[in-house]
Image (cartoon, rainbow, N blue to C red; front, side, top):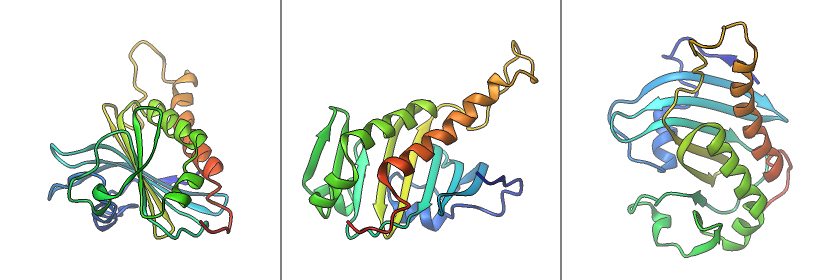
Length: 193
């Protein structure tokens, strides 16, 4: 998966992209922490840990996907913003009681976000110790926002030696859960929805 971006002036996910996703309230001051970029099966994967003062702290993941999307779809286990155009769209499905899917094209949304895909989103939220997770698929981009309590790359534990590789397994599992989303949604396939 790519390299760690040390210089936070080079944002792997821009403020404009975050605003365009429209998944949470944006403050005027966004602080970037850990950032990663890489490619998996020809899918560009960009990850940023951000803090928008009191409105959002967490992980945002952006993937430019090969699969052609002909709709805009939101999957969330929290309420979507009331001013989001999809807030008035019909509820497509309730997968589990906690996840809701909104879409401009319910048929493609049901195909893309199957029950297994929703399970992968739940796993992604758990691996990142997230309070909530939201995703928007539009314009051949999949954008995921995970509200978290923890730092993305926090491995410091005074009770475990830094040389103990099990600490690093936690970070590896987070990245693997992103790859599982790519696999389940088949984002690397050149097929349309």
